[in-house]
View 1 (tube, rainbow, N blue to C red):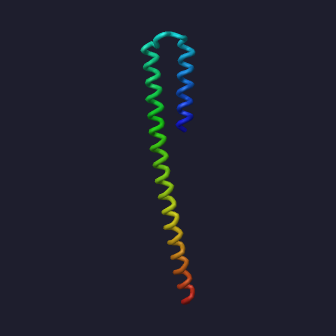
View 2 (cartoon, rainbow, N blue to C red; view 1 turned 180 degrees about the vertical axis):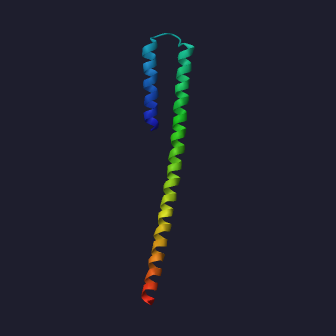
View 3 (cartoon, one colour; view 1 turned 90 degrees about the horizontal axis):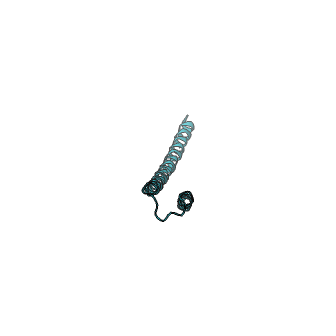
Length: 87
């Protein structure tokens, strides 16, 4: 994912250079837009990392709950078998 974001930033930079020409010094507006783009990429990478971490935690919780359910079903089946045998 980081490689694709780096590639995207590189393409944006190349496009920016091709549209701005071979000027000796970039305009302040262009530098501002590039800085904003970098900040956006960093924010997106951070958000992605946070969401992946949250997903991992939720998947672990889900597996734990599935295991609890399996144990409860086994206990229920054992109780049903005992009650069925007594009657």
